[in-house]
Length: 185
Image 1 (cartoon, helix red, strand yellow):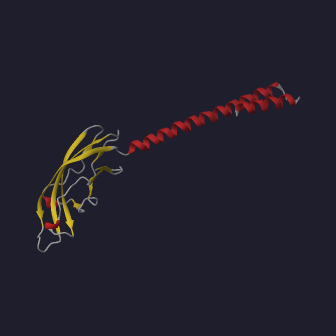
Image 2 (cartoon, rainbow, N blue to C red; image 1 turned 120 degrees about the vertical axis):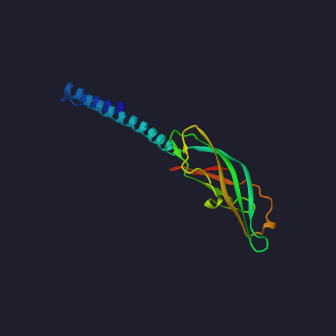
Image 3 (cartoon, rainbow, N blue to C red; image 1 turned 180 degrees about the vertical axis):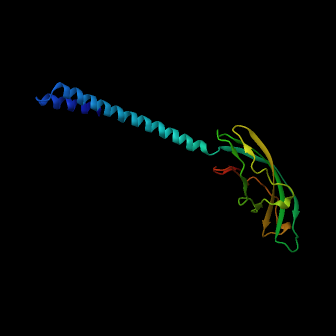
């Protein structure tokens, strides 16, 4: 584009006999500074877009890990009158923050809708001890292993109707402030 504009400027000054060399030099200097400014702006804009993209990517934590060592105990329910049963479930979670942003553990969510039968999980003080260490600091690259205790309820079945539970399809979500849910399956 700059070549075409400079060519047009040269042809215009050559065709017009009353234009002086000073006008050609001044026009060339003006166009050079204009195109330099445009090129500098486009280079800045490209770098700015890269920077804002990286900031947006690294603002939220990148947490990954696994849940394992599931155990269930203390089955509660009356097989004659109750159409539900409750279990206390205990498991380990090993996770790591891969983002350069330090964060804290906000909450853990469990989704048992893909289990057979479906489970509802709830964290409560009735279990006698905290379900997990809320506010646990998660610095970059340091693995953390915690024990989680949760109450699980199966509704609509009597205790003798509940088949052996397989927790392979349990979804565990670690939630940190300003993060997307991280799913462990």
